[in-house]
Image 1: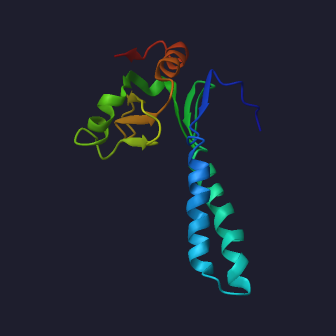
Image 2: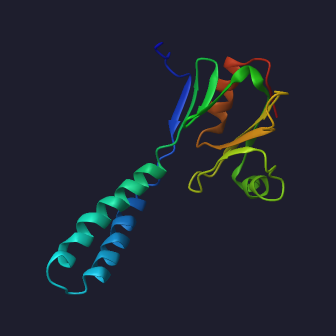
Image 3: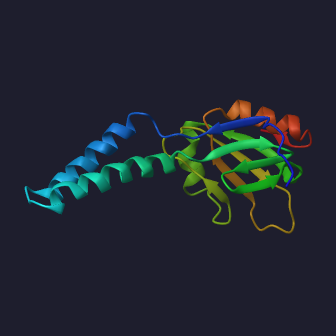
Length: 158
């Protein structure tokens, strides 16, 4: 197994910190609803199960990593060589709804996180792949596009 070089760009799309207390509160209320004053296992099991599950779910939601590394663009488990990226563009918060709505190609690869306001668009030039473009959430689109431009000078930026 070959060791991966340090990433040129890397970010993790964590959920906002204030979602954890809200999630735990919602799980606590649901556990109290299941408990309803009943004795025995129903008195403690809902709390033991539901509160950690809510924390786990919110942690998993924030586990998406966006990276530029070793000549590849990586989003979670998906990756594509940067030499296949023909054009790049930033999708500002105001244009995100249109990009994910009527303008969205059903064959596009999309990794969208609602709590991240901006996205990047990577238009592909690969005749063997039916995916026309990737649309990915990122908090720092300028830095991500700069890292892609450094790794692939052939990609034009819009």
